[in-house]
Length: 241
Figure 1 (cartoon, helix red, strand yellow):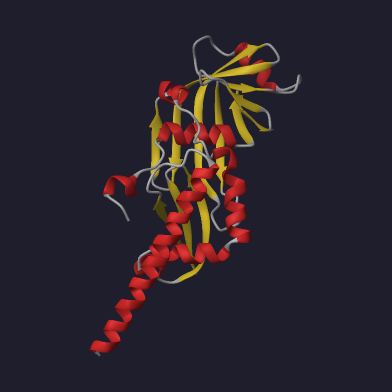
Figure 2 (cartoon, one colour):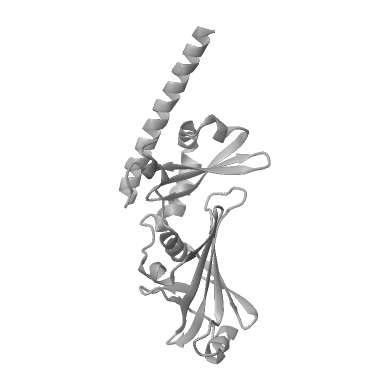
């Protein structure tokens, strides 16, 4: 499985948050005690500001105009939803607290506090680090890649489970591809009442879909080798018996 550094490699919190901002299709905005759901209405500027395109009659415009100067006036909430159907599809949530400032044709949101919550727990992300981070190079293609893997190559998903230890597969009823980034692939192991996630790291980062194809091929080769080793061990055990 490679050395421990390779196995543990994964996107940092700032990169993960920036990828979520780049790929989320909707967000909730809480301001002045009101909550608005926006769909396809946000973009992220290079300096980390979130640009919101809202209707002319949106209460958010008044919230931005009349908010006390220099004080946080709104909270933005984003959800990262797994593209492949499965139980508990929310992979992460992102909250940004900050100021809404009126600008030409949009509202500019300046984050002052950023919190990313994943199954492993919540982490505070420095706004400066968020602004400096770039989305994962596979983020825009992730939904298409995972859907294709689940729908067209279920045999490959089954082969990849051979890289998971027996304890990780105990009681498994279904395995689905949960996430992929330049550092590795994550599988969701579903059991009758619970689930667990297993990360399969790549031997080197994949900065393009072409490189991802090669990294996946290496994982599948390793999975076949692991299957052969287990079969040989069973044969030896039966022979000793």
